[in-house]
Image (cartoon, rainbow, N blue to C red; front, side, top):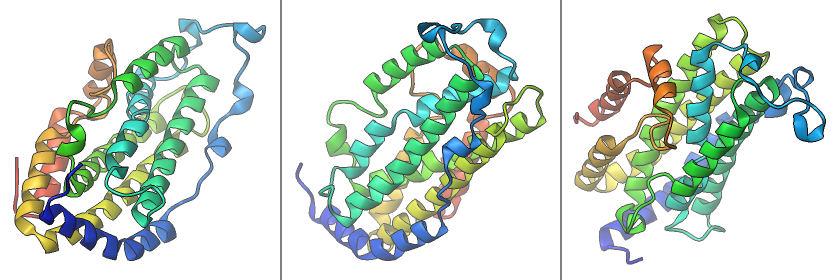
Length: 276
């Protein structure tokens, strides 16, 4: 992939700022452990090991929380696609590669935690969820012809700023519903709040990187963040077919709605005197 002089200038600026930003990221991060928050003794074997496969009557969780977990989990499953987009401009052994790798590991922790809860507590049909996972990961997130050329470093950073902002809000609201609902598995509310807190910090960190490129080339940076604002997708939107009912239930509870997401996006853009 060819790199323009402007892109090269932005990459150099990000590389110079990276150690300080990464140090803050690591210092403020919370190295929580997903397995601590999963109620393992609530689980039981599935039929292959002599137990019982999922049936609808297994579900004791509020529908909003159950369907919210599915949309959130499938979004977190887009990790390979996001990692490729974020890592493409630098060698993986570079400081940027290690930074992206650490961020990837945190996002992977979210997917692990959510799936463990779904499987152990039987909050959703795990066979259907696996088919959706295969479809979502095969399709990928923002994977299309020439997507590599389309995403320069400023586009990458701006994309993740919006993604993390929408994700942090989504999981915070889902945690609030889960906290007030009957049938919520032990540890799930705290898991959702941990994920939201991680995403909030990640949004702040990627915003720091955006501030760096904004200082280098304000015109290019503003054009990129406005473009990514228009392309930002709701949590669960770019996943798999057959999820309209899940989206209807979750959005009906005020989680991840178009209006709410637009308000978040415009709140970010307002800092740069921009709006949709």
